[in-house]
Length: 142
Image (tube, rainbow, N blue to C red; front, side, top):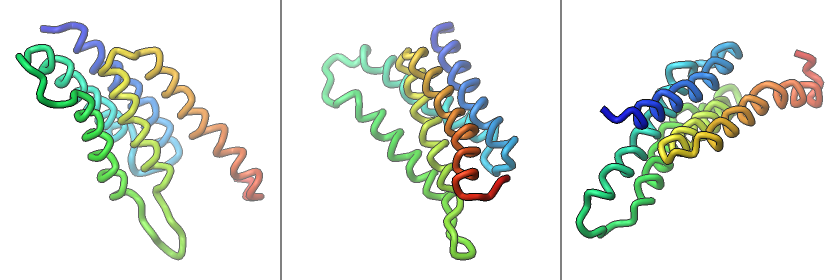
């Protein structure tokens, strides 16, 4: 068993789940499991690319295409959570958060753990601190 891969997968799962926990506490539908799975799944695809590429005798493809495919695939998933209801658009922040969770998973898969942790922390700042600022500016007071 490759312990490095296990560490990366668990790190991606934990970092994504941290974002999902905040979303759960904010009473959003996509929560701990969704964010954790998106982040870990993205990491998995990158790990697959990392392990398959060195075994190929002659590279006939660009290895970064896998990362691009993850971005496109998560974009499709995110599009499904955006809803137009009662003259308002809902789910944009959830979609953006899932998109970032995919990026965190990819960074983790490439072994960029510090970048993944930094992205998780800054995303939490957006989800929490920026939410309060946004509502203060809008005059909601919530």
